[in-house]
Length: 70
Image (cartoon, rainbow, N blue to C red):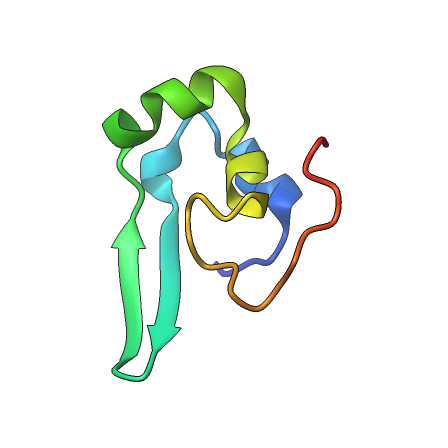
């Protein structure tokens, strides 16, 4: 499944390893699975959807998020 829904991404907070982020650059598309250990401290404070909106997970080059406090 693909999504641009921060609510859906937030629902996966307890299972970040199920999320694969897609980035595109001049060399093509690149997929990377989230690593729970690398996100541990951030996930203690924020849901996964907030981290995505803040741009900390990647995959948001197409969108600017005005309200990061949700």
